[in-house]
Amino acid sequence: MSKKMAVRNKNDKISDMTFSVPNIFGTLKSSIRPIFKVTLLLGFVVVCVLVFQATKEVVFEQWKVTEISINNDLQQVDPSSIAKILKKDEYTYLLQIDVTKLQNEIKKLSWVKQAEIRKKWPNTIEVLIEEYLPIARINKKLLVDSGILIGANNQKDMNELPLLNFVNQDFKNSGFKSKYFKTEGSNREYLEIVKRYKTIEKNFESIGIIVESLDISESLAWTINTSNKIKIKIGRKQHVKRINRLISTLHFIEKFEMVKTIDLRYNNGFAVDRKEVLKELSG
Image 1 (cartoon, rainbow, N blue to C red):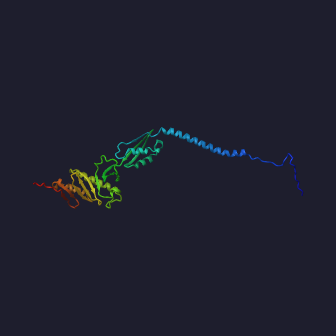
Image 2 (cartoon, one colour):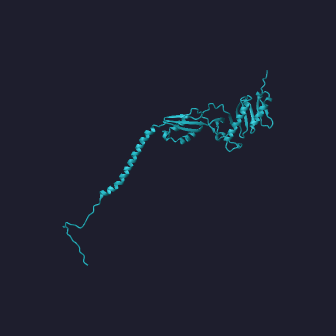
Image 3 (cartoon, rainbow, N blue to C red):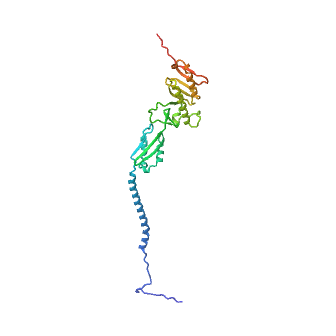
């Protein structure tokens, strides 16, 4: 079978060869279109953010905290420590303040028992603080109504509180602990000691004796110190009962002002030790 082949010379004007030119502009157009959309979207987001920030500043500025109100009956809590917390950026505007978070942060301050936060529009934050109530002095610290020991920020008006001296070298570092405590923690024991102390103090006041302090040994043995320098040894148990027994028989003690020590650690009585009297020698 024969094949036909068309042969043209180089002078022929017509060529059977065709050339295709790529559509560069169409390709570029299809590539640019998604980029343009993304750019447009990002631009829109940026504009929205800028508008929001500008609006936020205008709106929030109306409720910027310019006044802090703190109850003025605080004895131990320093108001400046509360003001320092409120200077944080997160507490600049009333609208953005997380009340619960702020309350918890203030409650971490020493002497703060409870904290209540109130927003008063448009520019005031009100802080109401309940302090722990000191009920006794213990080894240069203060025992509060919940049974914990706190270092005093202000010693003013604290001298009227009962003074309890725990005779224990480890007390300064970790608090007084004793194997004689009935409970695992010492908090409840502190409160019970103060309760009994106040009962004894009141009973002594009824007969004109002023209690100055109470010494407590590591074994929890009590010794009362009175204003007229008499030491009353009560022991580890039956504190109130033994004191009441002493009060009921006190009239039998002659020249009470000369008494040095009274030992109540007996089942049915007590021992009295008198002060030494130095006699003046006449020449």
